[in-house]
Every structure is written in C-alpha cells, then in structure tokens.
Length: 303
Image (tube, rainbow, N blue to C red):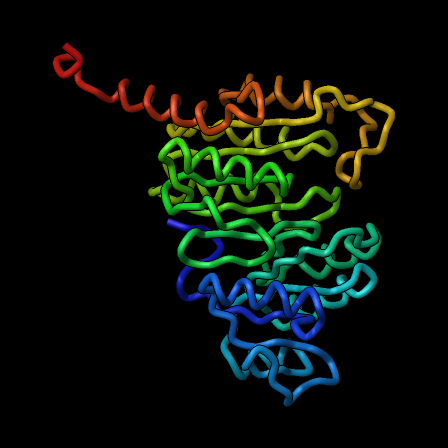
C-alpha cells in the first residue's frame, strides 16, 4: 500500500503558470496524477493546461476539495507559498525548490507546529507511487508497483535504486524524497514509521548521505521497533572531505557524528543491512527478502 498519496489524492499546483510549473504539471498529469487546479496570485479566473487558476490556496481548496499541493516557487518566495498552504490546512505539501534560506525554513517549521499539514521538502525530488500518483520531478520510467518503500535524501540515486529494484523483479509502493537540506519537513524517521505501520510493506530502502543526523534517528527507531521486514541502507559520501561543504546545508560536516562512516556504523548496529555500493542496492534487498522467506519455510519443506 502506498503512503502519503493514493488514488484519492487531488492536487493543486502553486506556481503552475510559470515555465517549470507548466512543464512539470503537464508531466504529472500525463502520468495520471489527479491535478485539479493551479494557484497563481493575480491570475485567478484564468485557465491553464485546461485547469482553473485561483488567486489563493484557500480558494482552490474550497472550490476543488484538493488535499495536496505541489509548489513550484523561486527560493525567496517558497516559504510564503508553503506557509499559505499550511494555513489553508492542505494535508500534504511537496516543495522541490532548492536554496530556500534556512531562516525562512525556520518560519515554515514554526507554522507546521500543531498544523494538519505534512510537508515534504524543500529540495525534494517528490513522491512517486507507481501507477497511482507522481508529485514532483522523480523519474518514473523504470518504476513498477510493489511492496518496497524507498526513503531518500538523494534525487539522482533514487532513480538508480528504483531501476535496480525493478531489474531485480521488485516493485515499490512509494518513493519519498525528503530532501537534502538541513531544515525541512518530513524526516527519514517519519517516513520509516509510515512504512512500518503499513502491513503491505515488504522491505524498506534508505538512501542517506553525509551531513545532519537523519540516519542516526532512523537507527534509534529501528533499535526500538525491531521490525521484521528487511531494511537496506545505502549511505554515500564515505570519501567526502570532512572540511568541505558538499552541495547543500544538510551536507555540511561539522560534528564528526554526521560522516558516512558514523551513519553506516549506527545503522549497522541497529540491524540495518548495508549495501556496500550504489550498484548493489537492488541485489542486496532481493537477497534479504529471499533469506527472510527461507527462514519462514518449515524444516520439512527445506528437506
């Protein structure tokens, strides 16, 4: 079963009339995502991509019963867009925007407290439930439906891992790009908890990287929950210079605890299976599932 999105997901796109919004919204609609409207201040009453445009998120939600928002906004306007969606009580908000100022995200996190909204991103590639819904720019070409949940901080590696899982005969239920920024919405731990609460999830793949403490929190959760399904992790950045900022705020190494080696050690101690290389994730999960199946076989059946 998918998490966060399903066939009842009704999407509005904030910033749909811009170039990126137009292109990506059209791609999502072509995939089958139920986009019901766009929001662009000053363009209310117009139509774009044969959909109605509203001036505000609140109007769009009231008129269309939308329950998700996809935000296409420049970095300096992204926080205001997220806060508007939160105040309109949109249950799910996904933001792709990179380079949102950290202090702006602090304001967004303050707005999230006590709200009804789950925020994915910013700096996220989006969410994909194959055959059901795509929010964002996540690649769909090799994705097939199945029982593996994917939680990722790396957009490019997500596409690679999905292709490997498909090649191994495994499908995914949902892939969630939580984003690589230090301050963001839904965490890796939050996503893992959602997958563990889903009885149809057969396994989970974590794609981590240097910076931050997301993976350590997942390790703490797994030690507490002791899940019966296999969890495979790939943590990249083992050779990253410790003194160098690596692309985003979440990849700023400052404490030593946020190195790839420290994360791999923490996850390994918690019982997570570590994929030794990016090209081995699919095979590692496939082997873990086979091993689990063999353990469930009665001794007589094993001969």
